[in-house]
Image 1 (cartoon, rainbow, N blue to C red):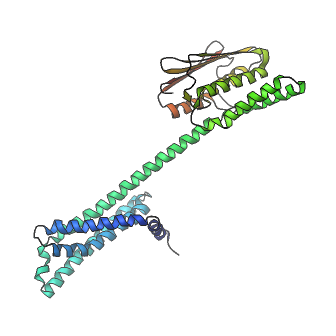
Image 2: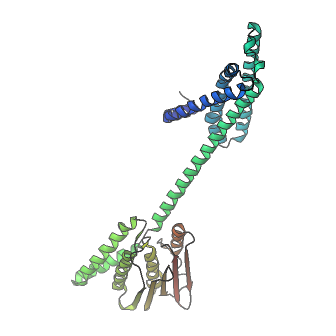
Image 3: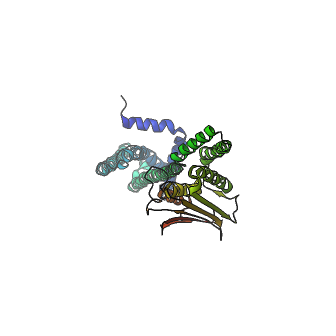
Length: 355
């Protein structure tokens, strides 16, 4: 049975065949560079080439062992003690192998009287040190690549997290609204009221917007406004004469784009917490305008409890979630505030350009 460590190495080879070409080119470049660099002083490239090509396999094995065994299995897994211990062992063992190789060359040259190939004609110790520079360079490249890969993965995870949060924050309309609208529609059909067809049309448009249009990152402001109007008309049917709603729109460029359900969330909140929790006559005022390159949406509603419009205990999209969504989308280019004063709750959203 192939061990997990061996499997990881085989898997890397199978998925990175093309990269072997770059590795081969790199080691050939090392061979050529050191041959000319150390052979330049004595213009004895043949001896230097012999030394480099004999020592290079040890350098290659050491580099790959560090990069594809020690670093992934110990350093990246935060087993720092064992990593540094094995790292030192690896350098010591490879150094002794290279020194042993040099000594073997000395002995062979002496016995065969090959003065032309005498190691004294090149600086073997300096060459060995140069080989270790290659090892450390290879390790540095591995760490930098891993760091970059981690950063890419982190950014990917952050993006996925943001998208997931935005999808959650678009959890759109409160279920009670749908149930109440269907109940009202049922009552109208029993009465054979002419209003039933209009209710079906508005509900159909609203559901189409929620289920399909809201999958986009941005929608036309006029579409959001249209669905707010539909929502208001359906809620008026529910609350009847005990509800007074005013929707003021001033100097709007309806062709501008905004995130879907951004404004609707404030409207729903005012109905859900400002009206539905009171049996008295209630009112809601919506004021939407553009001013000095800013989109300003102010929602005021009658309220009898300080926290009624702030806390969303039933699981809908609350104002805190709305603020989280704004922060994800607009960063610092927005201002959101809410306050309770004299039985009135007011929430105001200001989005700075661009919006």
